Amino acid sequence: MKTNILILGGGFGGLEVATGLRADLEDNFRITLIDKNDSFIIGFTKFDLMFGRRAPEDIKAYYSELNKKGIDFVQDTIEQIDPENKVVKTSSSTFTFDYLVVALGAELHPEAIPGFLEGGYSFYSFAEAQRIHPVIEKFSAGTILISVFDNPYQCPPSPYEAAFQLHDYFKGKGTRTDITIKTLAPTPIPLPMSKDASAALQELLGQHDIEFLPKHKVTALVPDKKHALVDGKGPMKYDLFLGVPIHMPPKVVLDSALGQNGWVQVDQNNLRTAFENVYAIGDVTNIPAGRFAVPKAGSFAEDAGKTVVDDILNTIKQENKSVKFNGIGTCFLEVGSGKVARVDGNILGNPEPQLTFSGPSEENRADRTAFETSRIEKWFK
Image 1 (cartoon, rainbow, N blue to C red):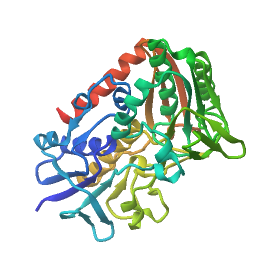
Image 2 (image 1 turned 90 degrees about the vertical axis):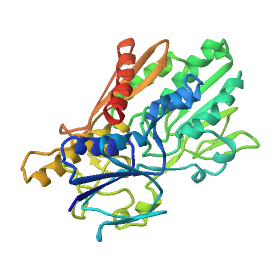
Image 3 (image 1 turned 180 degrees about the vertical axis):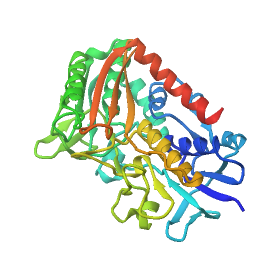
Image 4 (image 1 turned 180 degrees about the horizontal axis):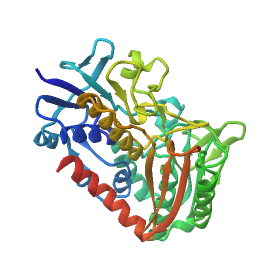
């Protein structure tokens, strides 16, 4: 009789678990990955869509390739998770499991900010990155506001990378002097986990004539007036508004016993939930790190996936190897002129969370390229 390992979500964490376990387990372990999409993209490639540098097919990796590796891929929508009875229901089937890994990420809720759907744009989804491309192409003068509405959100440096790339794009078109770019955040510094990394980022923003406005919490947009309403500060005029949508746990998680506290709570060492042989990793979780939490970013989910692979193999093989999730990850920021900055985090491996800002440099650009190609190679080839 086969042991069923079920993985919900095909992001960094889910892919790392599926391929990591498959590489170490025999065929009597059935590994199934379920995702509503047919393909995977690495988050920062959405900027390539946004600026028209790559076509959609150039950044996709198709989950059907997992079948060749001995992983059963099912494209379906998950409708119910029952961790107690070890059952998952999708729109077309029912799955039982011996081990479950929930890696469903966060859901985006642009409707949570009044006026945002009608008066703004985002770059946090494949479709939105495509939708904004022609808008940017036509934009030639005015004020661009880039707003973080609230925490947490995926890849904390991402809004600032958008600002850098807009700067470089309009500089190349010769229109940058006619465009004002401002970044707004509800927090006192752009990366609240680290004063040093924030200071380095703010210095870089200043060098690119990009204004950072701290403690600016946008609560609504007034599309017909092109005003952003800022809590306690009144309206701000914009010609183009980019926002980071409110992030929430997936509804299917909130409706389950796993989501009673919102984001799924796990043991921060081995990422087990309160239910036997049920794990949660990546953006769907909230893992405390001092006054903060492990960032929601792909590379941290990948590190979590490695931890879960180790812990499941420990259980299956009845071994007692040490397992410890350290929360190690990297976010890249393309700043233009062929250079990339990066933020490296070691969140749980030290007494205090550590973030290190480096670059921008051409070496970091090479690392960014290698980051993408190595993951696609590891998971899909």
